Image (cartoon, rainbow, N blue to C red):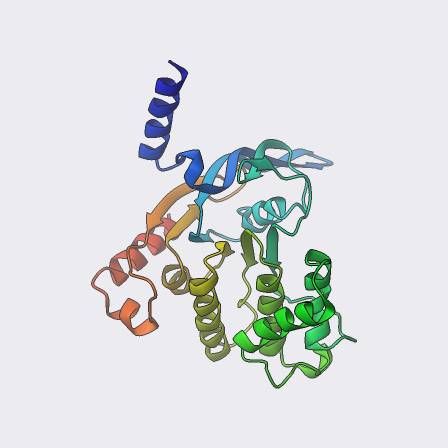
Length: 277
């Protein structure tokens, strides 16, 4: 009887576009709530927020400023306390930051006195303590090469451009082999040319690694180009998931193929219409 109830529940959840069978889920947010106390009373940022991210899925999240996107991501990262509900990775509730979740911030937050290689090694050394020094260095070098910084191993962070620093941030996040990659507008501070280059680098590495990814962006075109699904959040306070758009483009995908696809402008209109209402 219990099995039948579970199957019916999973079918209903799936049809509602919210819940999926547990064996397919990497990241699970259930009835999530975030409240900040203020002198005028509690301010409810997020409420009744339900979202599941599947294994090897790339999801982008869009919504107006102040809707709680970064708050939600910081809660997933374990950097912000959960007021209500729960977040789990592979069924295990999160209890703070951990190496199963890699984070790429808008500002890469590198140690300025360290080289690019040393910055990547910070995480690698902690996550792979039983590997040899040479093996750990090889991991760090591999991912710096993947982001195009093979000639900058020994450059200090202060000697790198903003775009190069973000490349180090991408290499650092992938190098610890997380189960979930969290990206908080990682290209928001970059010029359009550098932004496009780093989008291509990110998706090229992701195509190979297939790490479950959740990325916040304000850029509708970026959201469509990168994602399997685009999640739209309602405006705050009490923000929650407002709509989810499936992006049915083949992978690996090229920017030209996406722009030339018959459904591209249909997807784009759907997202803009949501944001304008």
